[in-house]
Figure 1 (cartoon, rainbow, N blue to C red):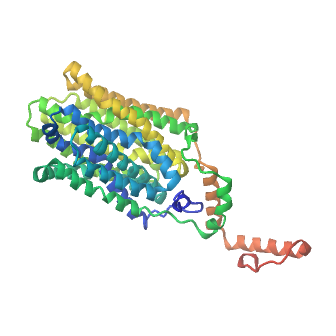
Figure 2 (figure 1 turned 90 degrees about the vertical axis):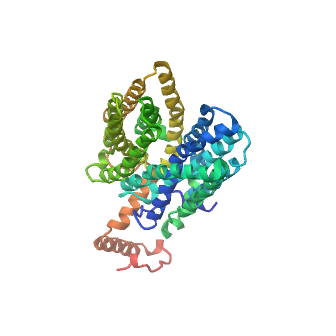
Figure 3 (figure 1 turned 60 degrees about the vertical axis):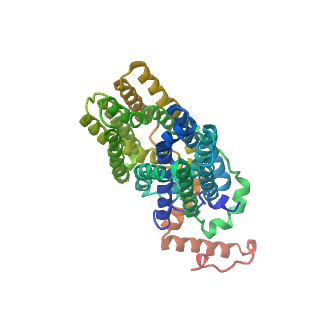
Length: 473
């Protein structure tokens, strides 16, 4: 397809850090919101599904689990598709899949059919949108990339605060079938976001030399050479440990409040507090990460965010009343937002633009395994002990351990790197840009004098020379 080359980080193209990039950021904001909030928002229909099919709550909970598993576990598949066809076509197809899954689910007659439609098909569609949107954001922003990542990550809490009440209204007015049908129509907006992902166009000079370069270098559909990068291996290990405990507190905090004897509405309000704080924490953290003296040390800021999150979990385990849980949700919202704003920014900084499409797919696959293990194991611990304190303590220890793995691994195992390109292609690209940008009139004059002298000294070795401003004084 024509988008394959144009969408693959063309040589000689600098990230515009604005312009159409703001439209790309807007699309990424919406995609991130749908991807992370939708699996949680669907839970408002669970009671209706239990009544309709005569099943248990654990059976309906598999819908959200399958959605998350597809979002994370299909990472390598998304990387292959992006490297083969480009971001825009993959996102357009993903939007159709996401919408089609929910629309078909509205006509299902069994819970297994809903697993396959609302779970597998919609989950695959969201995955095919989420990963390419991050790749395009990485290509459109460089200097302002931390801020762009923070703003796009804010889509998750914003959409969670909007989709959950909307789901309750749809269920009340139209039932779960009508609600699924309307949500399926809303997911068609993913196609609109995909259309915004316009590929960066290479300069004319790069286009002229593109064909010979393509013949020499064959594009890898999934680049496993990222595992040769020690920084990537440490990041993947740390992220996998982090995910084991990161999502546990939001899942159990409402049940914790109910167990303390508080009303359902008051307990559910804790998530509203958490989400509201999260909305502001992500862009603010992105702004801080973009500061000149912070950005080179962004990996340590990410480690601090994880330590902050883990320490918040440990303190939350001591909560004995509603006010304590409110304080916990405030600080958890801040730390959770910092982690959300920095996790992909740090990965982009580690692997670079050329390998990011493969790296994010492999990282999401590793995290998928941890996502499936984390909350269920915490549930088993709760069943065995009957105390939420141990659940929060284990989650805090896991997140804190991941922070130590990342910080200490980066400090002791990774050699200090100068700001060198990650690949030969990036090196050539940067060299070409530096030549074109830093060339002074004196340099141009020297070059033209050398060319003229060469032509005078050896006229018999040269044919006709086309007059060119760069070769004339």
